Length: 351
Ligand SMILES: O=P(O)(O)OC[C@H]1O[C@](O)(COP(=O)(O)O)[C@@H](O)[C@@H]1O
Ligand SMILES: [Mg+2]
Ligand SMILES: [Mg+2]
Image (cartoon, rainbow, N blue to C red):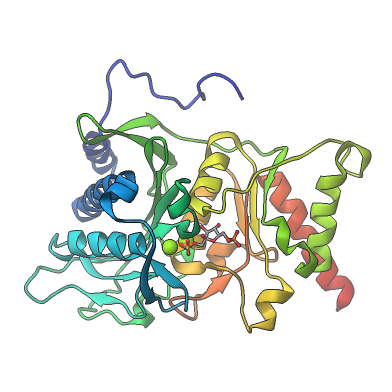
């Protein structure tokens, strides 16, 4: 795990995000509108990075005193980040509408502004439970195409499978601020140069190893897991003394962006399964399909990993609701194949 990753970009001639987007346009991977969209989202995330960096000095810690559509208490930074992204994306002329974890319905672009052909979905602040304890948090986003001829997009227009994403990305606000991005032509990482205020390409064409010895899951939910989940994690915990014949290490930051970024950097698996606690409340998972699971699945698959619900590929799901929740299994391909096979086999045996 030591040393620079093979995809690392030598800093002899730094490439900025803007230059990279020009290259992608020249390659025909993106058009001018999508390029502008990413620029605007990146600029908004720079502002969120400044706000999170201020912490108590900026009065951004603690609860906002309101709940979101998920029935969760909103943190001040959930609301601030949401407003920053809404404001930044209102006037650029690249969007037809946007949707957020923090808002029940899609937000149209104000009539005063030109409209574009894209739909943007975002989790403005991921890892909210870590804000007040100064642990890495982030922003996750997914970009879809607005159906032709639609000028006032409705929720229906957003309900497109993950395979239809035009772009996806996340930003981690940690010791450094890092943006990871895909347009369906590989995964690339940019680090924010705080002195110059610009994102600089630091890794190009990132790949995730098929094998790993590291897993991430909230173990405190173990007693609520399904049998195949108990079996899979039980075998990892048995390590060298068990059927897997080697030891596995565990990590859990409880910020999906940070746990996924570790996997993008050195491999691993991240799992938030369905469990009896969730189903008892009529739930279908913890994490949201449209602005957490789908964008992360697109990035992980583009980096050579896999992403399933434990039973089927996440990006093949036909969404039924804007804030729909799903089980999430993603990361190093070989481990995700094993975990998924255990669930499918258990279903087959049961049937
Ligand atoms: O508190 P738990 O059960 O460990 O769940 C942590 C998970 O919840 C999340 O915080 C949910 O995301 P939000 O913070 O955007 O609501 C994920 O980032 C994280 O993986
Ligand atoms: Mg989240
Ligand atoms: Mg959030």
